[in-house]
Length: 179
Length: 316
Image (cartoon, rainbow over all chains, first blue to last red; front, side, top):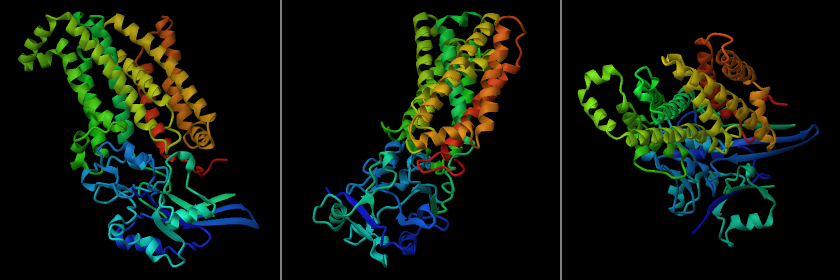
């Protein structure tokens, strides 16, 4: 079975927010909310500063705490690619999944259910790329099967230094950032 | 220097998590105090206190049902998709503490109902004569009454621990992620329950027993609170930051003054003088304990939402 993941090249990302706009358009994300966002991470002391620009979203963790804590069975791991999704019709809006996510990737949709990035699974099932990846002008975002040795994402991870976000939380994120 | 600039501004998420307002702390407090009341009333049944017409065991089960219902109403108000509340009972998710809690709550009501049947308040007896007949039937089986007592104590223990485990299962929030939180909330619930029952106990034996046991619960609560903070302070940086939120951060004044001082130390001192007959019993220490129990839940829920794996702003 495939294990979908994303690899983002932080040396190419310029924080243009095209991915953010594409996601909002593709998924009709309500005003005032974001399923993906940009982080400018600056470390060091002037003049030797290092800045990493990251496009972030739900990490579709391999060990997702949001799924484990859901009392209604609404949060689940999709059969295809291990993508973490929410059955809107099952969600009671208890917000346990939001508290459980160390990445603060979820929010309550104005209609009352928990909402988040879906890796654009509706597009992926048609053989298309997630909208954020498809529009990236610097081609810094890559999507594919992390378990397939022939996939671009697998080869990038094998050849470049990379890191996930908050690995100490133990969630095993499926989004990795190239250094 | 380490600076994070995030373009996300999601409601209830940014700049720090604030998904839970007053509803959850109120629910956790009422769940905890009802858990304590179930353990106390279960113990009273076991000791056959129901034979004494002045015993608080006449009032406890009904009062517990009322308080628990208010707590569940608060929980319901917190749901963002209220029409889907029944979804919690359409499944049992073994890894979800909230699912366990939903089902435990469903078992608590019948246990409290049978507890009430042993000796229900007179005004209920007058209005529903059927209950008197059921009560008489129950009294023909003394072993059955003891079983009701044991079941109440067990379910009370589960309910009390659950109110803490609900939060401690969230590994994403370092302040909550301590196995001691379940025990702390159980003991805090017991101390609040002993204080509440002490307020309206008419039997001198019960009053003395509750004041003494409340002192024991408060001492244990202070000990557990210390261990809870020590556990965080000797852990990773995120946990240390979380403990500092209570010890010296923005929540420190409320924590030290209302939770530790007014909620535990001062009533423990006053009640110690009262049980050794150096001062008269008064309503003040129990009221302080109850207020401390409420504020403990508010502080833990609010500070826990601020605590995070990435650095908390404003800390050294």
